[in-house]
Amino acid sequence: MLKLKQVMAEAGLKQADLATLLGWSVPGTNVLLNSGAWPKRADKTHCKAQITAWLEAHGVRVKGVFAAVNTKVAGAGVAAPGRPGVAPEDGGHDGNALNEKDETMLRRKTMLTPAARRKWGFTLDPFLDPQSAGEVYLSAAAQDAYESIIAQAKAGAGLLAIIGESGAGKTTIKDLAVQYLLEHEPTVTLIQPYPQGMEPDDEKGKTMKAAHIAEAILRALTPDARPRASSEARFNQVHRALMASGGRHVLIIEEAHSLPTATLKHLKRFIELKAGLKSLLAVVLIGQPELAQRLSPRNLEVREVSQRCVDVPLPALTVPEIEAFLLHRLGRAEVFAADAYAALHRALQGYDGDGPRSFTYPLAVQNWAAEAMNRAAAIGAPTVTADLVDALVSARK
Image (cartoon, rainbow, N blue to C red; front, side):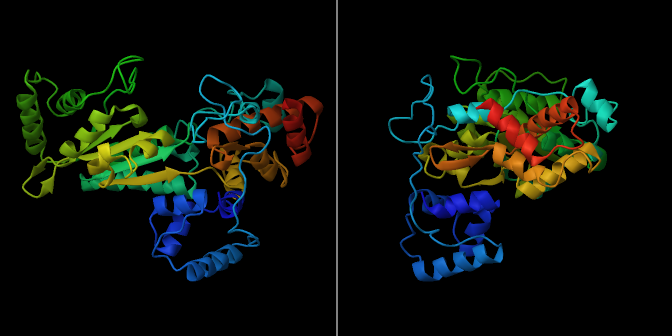
């Protein structure tokens, strides 16, 4: 891994922005950061100068950023499935594996104590799930995801994937977009299959097949019609229902990382349903990072889908975004001292098979924030400070 990746993560700089700067694809940029392999046609001298200037413009140190660093830090290996604390033998990345430090760092759902609510004057816990649009904080990336869902629905065409870690706010963003569409776009039909119990194979649960998606479309457009028995007749029925409705249609599938490969491949056939040149169905997938891996252009099984899919990632929050998030949710500035936001960011840094990894997603941030507020109330501290957060981290080690 290049030191550049570590430096960018610490500064909150996005790989997508670096890719845009260099005129590369995001996967190509990711290969450079993870392995140090430059594209064959790249002018290394020119690219390095561009990257250096970009980093300096953001106030980031540039010394040694193109050097390789060893990510196998003692005590920070990735736990292999079923073998805590043991790194995968092939050195590959296991997106679900956390080392001991990460398990300490991530907290369970934490509610504000009555003492903490009284201290800062909250009648209800401010970290309850948002009940109105005004309660939702959107980072720049989350705003992009929200607007992308709406734009896809308005177009009624194309394939979009909203990708983020657990707790990144994917469902909240989706719900906010759905609320907007219901209130402002009456000609858009929302189709949302139920993902409950869905798994990639039938051993752990039930797979979502193309037939289930067809049933969801028919249920939304012609709720009284009975799906035809044969596959050909059923999809002909779906096509006719989409054409007859006359509006625009968007299919939104949550937990899409659990879709079986066959269903991912069949999505191409759904977005190709048309009336002449007019597309009849847009598809929005919402899933965890495993979805990006499964939709990678390197996965030849789904190449027809991956080439047509636009990925919208939800990265971890930066220090300024953590501050903005907490100020928005709490509605007051006197709870956290100015240095506490960076301390919360430090508390949620870990490692994976590719090196340093940030877990500063909204859910994790608010759980740590609630814990710190509870502690401040218990000891009578006037505000949550960096020292208080650091003490909580030390107590967990």
